[in-house]
Length: 176
Length: 297
Image (cartoon, rainbow over all chains, first blue to last red; front, top):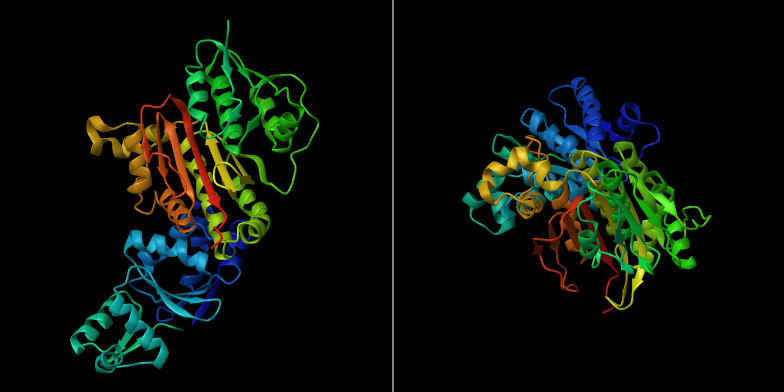
């Protein structure tokens, strides 16, 4: 696991004086810094993008940083957004809906959630995995009070979106 | 020969079309913007007047003239809002300009500020967050989460100028009490430019889809409701939609005027038309965002 601090990258790539991720050129520059950091990571490592020190995130920056990173690297690497606020989530959700993408995010209160257009059963299944740990489809089905096929489809949706990992018949949420 | 353009006595978004009609075609004769009888101007009126001055200066035969409001209090307010500081670049000013600096009074959250590039957008967002938080939470009674969304909306509106206008523009943010119109306190963001407008900005990538229907109104609809952009990048064109979403959450109003059309996201408390076409033509784009205080239950 490796944490990539966006505030540090913002200061290194754009300006020491900025504390906000706003404007598309800023987003592009910061994404370039994140890509450099990603290049130094093991391909198996979950990339933790740290928003803890970021104040404002606008939609242009959310698109350049989160949207384009997931589009380009999301199939090959797991991502987790760390330290997001409700306002960050609004901007990120807007972008993810446009691109039909999803990502796991941990809020500043420690709460884990899925951002992006994910069906309700899958969202609830993700909540179960983060609450109880790795589980098989039958266990998720029991907790959701749905049939095993519904649970399996929900977990497969999460796996396809790279929000959970599957080992044999058990699924684990990407929570890093 | 000089043509007189009367600045409305009460100059805001509701009298703007009257002003645009008087503005007309700035290319033939020198314009005199007559504001001597103006009694009040909203941030929307002031940034719109600057856009008119820029358009007249750049496209007309001579730099336009402007008469300062005769009412001392009105002129002082324009000074505190930062109007004259920028007006002198585009107008030949007649009348006594008050010696007041653009102020950080309790109501002027952001004095009129030029937006020329992305650095200006950063500066605007940096400078407004603390004060907007105090007003949005303390005076309007909105949740803390409204504050950062406010900065996001402001940033996206300013970027619209940088990326689409083809020229610079202005932004101003103010809080005031709308006694007659709403009976509540509001925060108003006004953004204006004298650039190419939505229709021309989107023409190359979008007009083919609309054929003969392509006009200012369809361009605004495409931008606001379909996320259309002049760029091929599928991630572009999300800004206005994001602003609309933010404002809807806080019962706010969004109005975008460009060319001869105006599109509005209308909250329950307002009675504007969602789409108005056939307005008097005016250069560039003018964006108005209004966030009202939470209504007491």
